[in-house]
Amino acid sequence: MAEEKLQLNDLESGSAAAVKKRDADRPSGAYERVIQPCVAELVGTAFFVFVGCVSVIENVEAAGRLQPALAHGLAVAVLVACMAEVSGGHFNPPFTMAVYLCGGIQMKMVVPYIVSQLIGGVLGAAMSRVMTSGEHYASAQGAAFAVVQSEERLMAAIFGEVAMTCLVTTVVLMSAVNTKSKSPMAPFLIGCTVIFNILAGADVSGACMNPARALGPAVMMGYWGYHWVYWVGPLSGGLLAVVLVRLLLGDGKQWPHGNALQDAALNQLQPSNCVDLRFLLQTGGPGLLLEVPTRRLPDNLLAATWP
Image 1 (cartoon, rainbow, N blue to C red):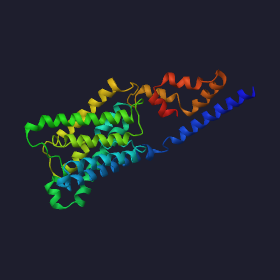
Image 2 (cartoon, rainbow, N blue to C red; image 1 turned 180 degrees about the vertical axis):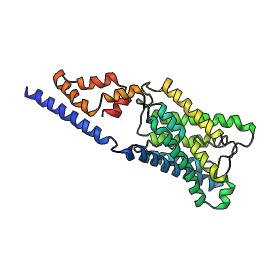
Image 3 (tube, helix red, strand yellow; image 1 turned 90 degrees about the vertical axis):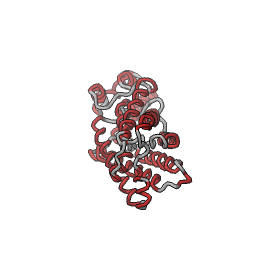
Image 4 (cartoon, rainbow, N blue to C red; image 1 turned 30 degrees about the vertical axis):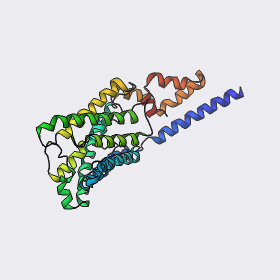
């Protein structure tokens, strides 16, 4: 009998600790919930575009496309690793759209994220203009995407942007959002995908994969030739990746944040209900606490609300 009481006390203490940790991990104010993630997206995108543009503008001819490929990929890997716990480390509108459609962020954050990313792209391009020489900046057209010069290469460029963005977005979703395949190596995997996409497709379309990366140099240089390709291609590729993950590759448990079903489920796990659940554990036997939420909620929602 004493052992049973001790076990129940341990279970109750563990549940209380879990609730306390859950509440402590929750953002405490509007700044942490909304403003700070947007600032992280703006700063991260600015530095990514800055490094990418400088690597193109000051590219050594002997290095070919290896220099910008490594610069873009390593910058993505480092920035995602640094900002993942603050904003998720998207730095790319198609990523934000895809992550939302697979249940990774709330709908109310989609537009602020994308606006922050576009502003960051312009800021990063401006930083690269300050750093580089005027001669190199002009000869590289400010690192704007000027690969497509005629209708003959248009379809190949669009297809390349769709395919490469689909690939890198799939890596993002499978390594950072999908419940079964989440990996702590996500920043490394995403960075490597950016590197080999640029190595493979830079001469076809420029391997942009990111409208924010395209917008910044276009604004600073005033170069808008076939600029729409770098919006249509990446956005289409991101949507295609969502289809692949939601219908074929993913675990089928994601849904976009912000719908009525999820809100109702979240209300079942508010702190006021935790005491009742612990009471059920004491009166109904071991395992009942775990059975209640797992039968009602998908794994990704449970992980977000019940540590």
